[in-house]
Length: 366
Length: 210
Image (tube, rainbow over all chains, first blue to last red; front, side, top):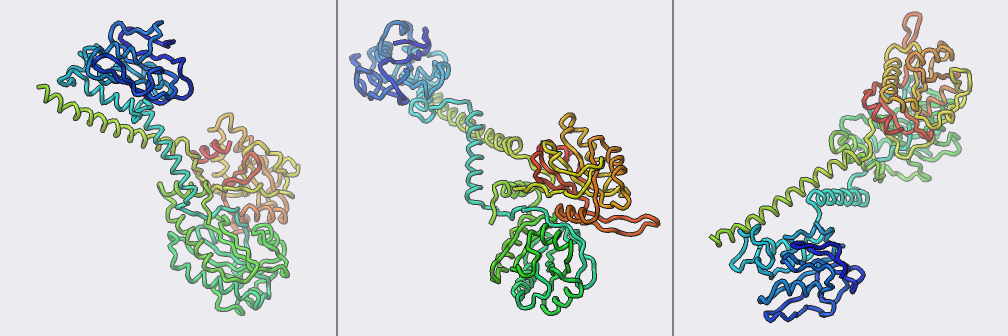
């Protein structure tokens, strides 16, 4: 035996050269009244069921139990210390699980051999009040049971356990949040273009008009006619049903950008597309390239027309882009996304806002 | 007497265990809160783009020193972009003043924060005047402008609307979007602040961007 530390009245932790590898937490043996050992495992190792152990902890508080240089088996020492009592059990702790020598205090070590009489262990004064009729320290025994049973095998301060528990809870919660996505948001794709254009009624319409509102844009070429009927139907349907969505007081607008048109042409197209309630805005020339081409990233060539929509929030951010290759009526999808946006608006204060910001960070997008 | 003591011992043990559990719970809650407030990502006051694109080109605009404006020259710095004009009565000087204060508050790291004010009133604002104007707020500020075609193109991509507004006697106002935009050190348009952003919040956001 090669003790790491030993001393009178203290525990001894020593590596057992007969064992190697990761050991179990405990091993035990027993001593009969005749003092003959009855180990629960092979007596050669003397420490339990034969599973390998790296280190051993032995209660040696009784004078004369110093193991330095003795080479004694720890279990034998406990038997010798305990004397010819009814039943003794020695427990051996894996220091890799218990921690340092100081973690296994005399009190715990006392109860490691939970059948050693108090007097034999030499700890009668400190625990006198909790001794039972047999002179055994029950409280120490209970603590030791926690220690040796493995229910309290990683002896860390309470605050450390709490900290670890808290971090684990946060980690698990974050993982669950990312996987389950209980809150969904629309991505902040990029800035919607700024513009000042003229609508079909000759009024100046600017991107600032949409500040604080949710705006659904669509893009149609001038003189689109029946090709664009599906688009107008979708715009009207969404405009009608969006009234039922709680947008936390934000206005909902629909804007139809008529590409390549002057205001008069835009008015003509609007009238032909009745009953569209959208604001029809003419966009042509450099503005067409700047606003539709660069800003909304849509083709400006009328021959390349395909239905497309964009949702812009009150900050002027594009939150949804819908580029359909067919005229499929997908108003339901637009409404669902507008509802998601409304949900974010309704929860943009207090703790809920952190949750929604986390949803952005985890990219919980529909 | 021994019996009394014997019955009290389990009670004490139970109480001690309860206190330990309660203490652990308190620590866990405090740890969770600390993790949220300290370890959690900074919550920007402005609106953040999660997957930002490179900032749109400013091709066609000129710096106040007469050179072509190239965003690459600001690589490694946080560039705050603001569209305004020199006769702007309130929003522009307030924003420039706030950014100058924030830059001073940041100390030495503030040297890596630049403000670029782009005049949307090229008829009245010369490059030299723009430079003199912005540097009256802070020596680290840069001015720029260009012809209307270039301004329209650049402003549209930055979500900026501007148009000649009401006549004010011999002068006139220019209506414009007054948001402040942040381009990060890698040249990505990352954040949009509303007009009149609080200096403390701006400082906190800039510290995070830096």
